[in-house]
Each structure stands twice: as C-alpha cells, then as structure tokens.
Length: 619
Image (cartoon, rainbow, N blue to C red; front, side):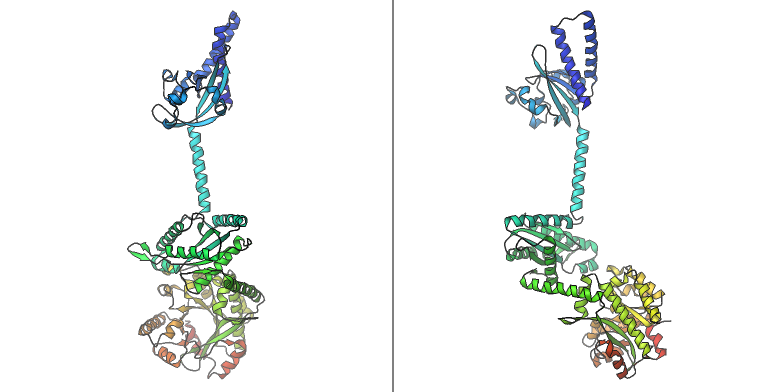
C-alpha cells in the first residue's frame, strides 16, 4: 500500500514538474533545486517495479514507464496514444472504437479509483492478473490527467485460488464419504435439520428412507472387499441418480444409506419414492467376469405435526428398517401407527431389560450334555431367560439381540458366567464333582478387559479349579472373512494358558473355521443343530458329519452334537462316531431348582473320574 502511494506521488511530481517548467519562470537557485527534485522523481518512475502510465481524460495513454512496457510486452511507442481497453484486457473483453466513442475517464472514476484486479493479456498472448489503481491530477493549465499504477499479482491470485480450492476440497472431504462420494453422516445431519426447519414454515413434511444392502456381508466373505466396494459404489450411483433434485442421499455406515425427502404430504408419497428406489437399485452389478446380487431393504419414516426432530426421525426409520429386515427383505416398511405401537413396546422392553441386567434379575436355565453311552451326564450349558413382568418368559432368540442393541451383551454374559460358576459349586456340594458347567462368550465378552480376571476370581472365590468350567465361543465370532484370525483368538489363548477349556460352538454352520481349527487353542467343538436335524434325511449331511468327526478325532478334540430330538437321530449319530449329545431327547433347559432332581432321576448322574479327561481331551 505504502509503495503504491509513493509511486503515485512520484508520478504526480513528474506531471507537476513538467507543467511548472512550461508556465513558470524560476530564479537560478530555485530552478536548480527543482531540477534535482525532478531528477529524483524521474529516477523513481523509471526504476519502479510497478507499471505506471499517464492518461488524458479521453483515456489515451500519454506516458508509460519501462516497468509497464515489460508488464505488457509492448514498446512504449505501441501504446502511447491508445486506450489500454483496446489491447490490455482479454480479447472478448476489449472495447472497440464504437464503444470508446465519447469515453471519458472522469465518468468512470468511481469504478476505477478503488483498487481493482483484472485479467490482462500480454502481446505474446500470455494471461496474467493485474491490480490497478487510479488517481486524477489537475495541471496548472487546468488540464486533468489520470495516473494509473499497475502491479502483476498473478502469483498472489494463484496462491489464493489454490488456498480456496484446498479449503473447498477439505470441506468436501469433511462432509463426504471417501468411497462413494456421497454426503456423510455430518452432512446428513446438517441437511436434515435444515429440511425440518423449512418444513415448520411451509407446513410440509420431511421423509427419511433408511436403506440397507441385503446379504452384503456374504458378498464380502465370498468375493472379497473389492467386490463389496463395487456394490457400494453402484448402489450410491443408482441412488444419486434416482432421487429428486431437492433430496439428499448420504452414506451413514458400512452398507447403510439414508435419503432425506423434502416437501412431502403423506406417508404414501414417501412410500412411492421408496418403491422407485427399490426398482432403481435392485439390479445385478457387473463384477469382473460375472455379476453380483444387489438388493436393498428400506425403512421409511415421516415427520408429523411439525414436532419430529432429526434424531427421532432417524430412530423411527431405523426401527422400520429393522422390521423389514426381520420380516421379509427387499421391500419398504413404513413407520405407521402399528409400527409405532410396536416401537413403543420395544422401547419399554429395552428400559426394562436394562434395569433387569443392572439389578441381576435375569433367570438362567441349564441344559444337560450326555455321553454316547446311556446314563452318563457330562455337563450343563447355561442359557439365559428373562421373566418379563407382562410378556412372560423371553427366550435368548429375542433377548440377546435386544441386549446387543443396548450394548449390554457383555454384562449379560458376565451374569451367565456367574450363574455357571454358582451351579458348578452346587454340583460339587451335591457330590457331582465330574459334571461340568459351560457358558457362552460373545465377541463383546471376549473383548472385555476384565473378562479373564473376573472368571479366574470367580473360580477362586468358589473354590473351583480352571477345568471345572467350559467357555463356548460361536465360530463366527472367532473368524473374519477368508479365515483370518481376529483378536479374539488371543483371548482364547489366554484362557487356555490359564487352564480354562474353550469349545467352538455352532461348528459347521460357518465357512471360515475349518482351515484355522488346528491353530486355535480350543479343546472341542459343538456341531450345529442343523447337522443333527438333517442326519437322517440327507446323505450329504451324513458324509459331511462323518468327515468332521474324523477331523476332530485327528485333532484330539471333544465333540458334542446339538439338536437331538429323536432316538433315531441319536442312533444314527452314534453310528457315525458321535460321542456326546445335547437336545430335547434328553432334557429341555432346566431351571436351577430342577437340576438336582433331574440328576437324581437320571440312570447314572455323574461320569466316572477316568472318563473326565477323555471328555475334555486334555493330555
């Protein structure tokens, strides 16, 4: 700023000196002094780094300094007598003779007196940014002139544009998903809150479509994550194309998308949009030499009476999505009056379950495991039940997903662990020292930092030993896709190092465990009930079962088969090498108060000491 003002002052001094010399006579001393000052002013103008030019009021150049010639790439003689508007701007912005007719600088002074930035073009065609400022000066003759200072600011402008582009890019990254380019959860929240605010003014309603890809995990497990990414990108593109211009689609999770629909009147309007999205998305995705199945389920919720907030609407659409996923995928479920009633009931149940877990009010049942030979009881598996105040007994099929949704599954498993240890202590008091107890460990329990310590402390507190209890872990918990071991494997190894036996539950129902079976610190497997139920009617199941039995024998692993309901099943499984069984044929899960009576009524309630290590397959 100061440099520009100095140059303006110097240029003014030049003009002042010229007209002073023409119209005033000076004494010798005064003339010499003035000549020195004029020399300094001329020196400043000629060597200034900024371009300087003097124009008359008709806009014609009267004088330019060398810096302006360098800036524009023209010689001074090529510019003097011309209006810069005829050669300096970009070609499409230049003024022709007709436009310049009657042009006066003082008429445009208001626009040009402030510092302006323009794009100019040099003689060689190169484009640059120039900052121009102008001031008007009146000579002693009364003639007015304009002094323009021109500075090349290309580098500054480019840096500013780069900074703006970087800022925009960072803002886009912060608000959008990397893989699909769709808005993320933060941008969804902003857009949804604005839509609800607008709806309160317009008396319209806002709809939410919560979308989930069906069987997406199977795509990842079978074809790998690149295939899953291809399906996600295809889904995102189809949704982006299919939604209305006023709406927004965001990716909010691994395979979850949300569409915000503005300006709706009824739930029917929202459902129609959801049905249209189903048709647009539910098409196969080309992947390498084949195709991948791409199907979605949608939960729909609509704001009502101008009172629904963003969080409430998201919860409602999520509940509708949960309903459609558990009652027939591939369709739209709307959050209507019936679903609202069920949601309110489920919410009440969540509150009650949380209180029941915190107050240790759950009930535990115990189902026996029996040996191949009649009359030998191997142990009892601990199974949770919840005596709901109004709904009666809630079984694990409904209870466990509810606990998981509340983030309480580890606490529930801890209670089951305590129940298993308590029963084992009672079994010892009753003289059944060789009958063991087991409990199920979820991924949340295996990841709990206090799990191993609390288990060992619980054993010690009840005067039990490490081999008095068995931990059952579901196969799908231990393995990720392609047989890669998860961090839970370390917890299993820690349990084994402490002398606690772990078995792999639901074995044979997954596709990841067999390849890694020998690498796990487990002592046995429980064959999934699907094998036991299909053993009589499907020869292929019998072949698979016999192969797994041989594998377990080779690896010296204890075996239990679940789901035994008939004597015919039991007989066939014995022929195929089954050693231990569990199912309704022997006993349904028993409340703790019935365990002792059941044992007393059984032919021979405890296994012989010599059988115990064979059962656990310990060396």
